[in-house]
Amino acid sequence: MFPANQLVVSPQEEQQKINFLKEQRIEGMLSQMEGVINAKVTIALPTYDEGSNASPSSVAVFIKYSPQVNMEAFRVKIKDLIEMSIPGLQYSKISILMQPAEFRMVADVPARQTFWIMDVINANKGKVVKWLMKYPYPLMLSLTGLLLGVGILIGYFCLRRRF
Image 1 (cartoon, one colour):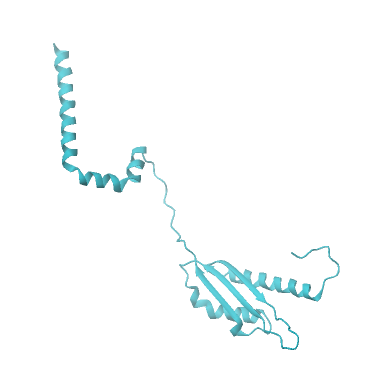
Image 2 (cartoon, rainbow, N blue to C red):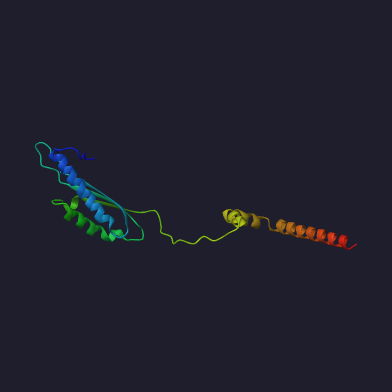
């Protein structure tokens, strides 16, 4: 962003470097706060128009935070921190946007050993249960017929072996 091999820098470029370092420093402080996941800071320097006064500096802050922490309780303290970090900055020229992250921290649950059939059943649990509830009598009749058929085959082979 700023070439290191440049010997002579303009006053505007020097001011940009200082501004960039201030932004980085404030972002670092905000990132150290409990619950802050990401912090971005942009400092708008005063602009000087011909024949008019300079527009005042302003700061925009974006903070993404864990929803488990109440960051709104720190809004005033964050604004105070930023106001004191930048000389001449007016309190009313600080804008803060706080956004809760869209994830929840979940405790790790150890994986347990399962058979492949359990994976299939779990994947289609709703469909299997729905089908079983829809056709209970044909299912019981089919299972009864299957057990009766297996019983007859076993009896047949047992009787045949005796003689």
